[in-house]
Image 1 (cartoon, rainbow, N blue to C red):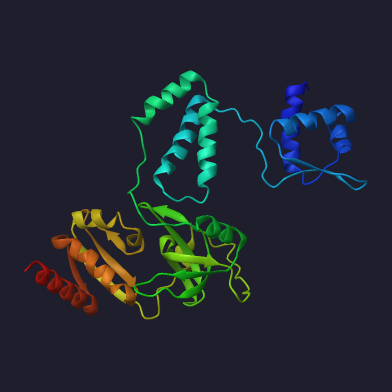
Image 2 (image 1 turned 45 degrees about the vertical axis):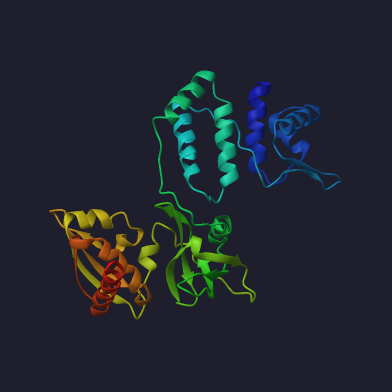
Length: 315
C-alpha cells in the first residue's frame, strides 16, 4: 500500500473509531510508530479534526464534526449533487443552511474549469423553483434534532389571535410549496398533529421535565397510519371537477382527503378540525364552480357567511 492509499484508508479508519492510539494504528497498518505520527499530522493538515489526549491513558480521537474520505464522482453525479443543493437556495430557512452553501461551494471550486463552465451554462437553463414565501422558520435545526433524539419540546404556536404554549414531540420536518411543516405528537391533543413551522414563535426545552414517548418507529413515511382525526372532527364531503382535482392536488392537506375517479374528477372526503372551518370555507370559495360542497352543514353556513361579506365589500 503506497502512502496516498494509506492516508485514504487511515482517514476512513479514524472516522469509524471513537478513540485510538498511535501504536494501535501503526500495528494495524504495519508501519512504525514514527511513520504513523507523520501520517496523523498530515491528516490533521488536510482538515481531519483530530484531538490528542496526553498521559498514560491518552490517545487520539476525532472530534464530532467528522471529515468524510475522498469520494470519486463521475461528472454527471457531481452535477446532480450540485444542482440538488443549488435548488435549496430558494428556501429562506434550512436546517443546515450554512453547511449546504459550503458543500455547494466546495463542489464548484474543486471541479475542473470545463465542468464549472458547464455548470454556469446549466444555471441559466435548469432550476427547481418553490413559491417565494416571507414566512420565517428559524427553529428547523432544533426541531430536526429533537425528532432524531426523541425529545420533547415546548412551543408557542400561533393559532388565530392566540399563541399558547404546548408540548410536542417532533417526528420530523419537511418542506412543501415553500413552507416547512413538522408532524409531531401533541400532548395537549394526545394525538399526532401537523404544525406549520413558521407559526412556531418560540421553541424551548419544557420548563418541567417530561418523559418522551417511544416514537422511534414513527417517521415521515408512516405517520399517517398513526394519525387519528380529532374526536370532534367534522366530515367534509365535496364533489370536484377535473380542474378542481388539479387545484386540490397542490394543497398539502389534500393528500388524505382527495379521491380521484377514473375520468379525472374526484371528491374530498374525510375529517377536518372544527377550528379550521374558516380556512376550508375560504379555500373552497376559491374553487368557484369546480366544487360542490355537500357537507357538513356548518361548513356550508360558513361559506355563505364569507360570500355575504365579500358581496358587502364589493357592493
